[in-house]
Length: 509
Image (cartoon, rainbow, N blue to C red; front, side, top):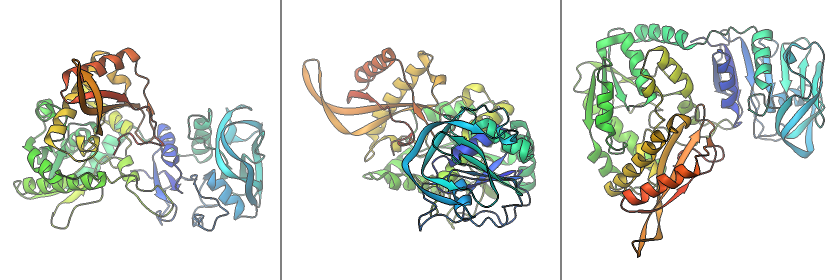
């Protein structure tokens, strides 16, 4: 993989969005914690410093070692990064009288600045900081202002260093993508060669070299990620790939057989393993969401260990891990805190003597779909909504029982079938139903009921790092609510989740 752009993470909720915007320019980039990035930067063409919830004036402020970066590589400092360069390089940062948060407009742009080519005065930008730069660092030159922020952007003479106090990566910065393009392409001269076809060609070659004639076992889920990983591996090693689809008892209704049928004709060697009873037995009485995830991850590995022993001389376990899984599972002081553990991130126990291969580890979800399209995978399969690895276990709040699983499977089928029949499925990035750990009073047939409550969730997103709830038509919600209550025994109330991410997550657990 070409290591073109290095993004240093200081804990901002927007860091992943910077990466998304860079990738949209067909430029490969990677995120590293500010205090743990590669010592060899020879393959990088540019560096971006992200924002942070910290203040540069605080005792706990992140202090990156920029000795191998400043003056040696093109550098773009965003928000905290801009304040850091100022505060510790001869300038001054002080607390603002009022928190500078939300929309602002550029009121001044210095003429003939390549960074602002194609950007007009009054362009809207997004602020998110409580400190403000009061004086520029040594050799700093102001290149943009807003009405309230004099030093909205500056550069440093004698270096290819630019700094901005706003977030170009968010949707509200209307010319943000153009500014990033100007910096990366026109100023830093970074090649725009990160395309799906290029990724496939490079990854297949890399897999051939890494795996040689070794046998690989892969856990298929029926989802986009594992399917694309399987096809990539199949192109590289053919018959040496052994795919296993495990029924953990927490799949959607009829999904085990449907998925096995789906893979017929794709040329993959797939074996179905029905281990539902084993998973549900281990999960009995467990309510804590993290514990549920860890149990499912452990049993999943145990099942794979059992199955892999049936394959002679298997040496590798392939996984459909994608970049958001990796980012959300990183926990260091300062940068992106662990939100939840992922069952397919973090390696294998010592007793399982398989090495891990993760061909999609550096891709976001939308990039996986584009790679899948370039591989010729059925568009209907690529259009499937994401489904969590732990399955319905994290959509059943509280303890898990076979009865609850059946209720949620029935509800989920009504909801998803309804979205498809109304032509809404492809307009939604992810949808699902959540079984709440409360009962509510209802009336059915003149009789009082005291039954389960279901929450419906539908979001629109690009890669799951951020998401907005979908404004489904009221007529649809009325119909699907009525169908659920009438068709699924044990449910008498349906609500709709209108939370966005952040502050909520897509899944409830």
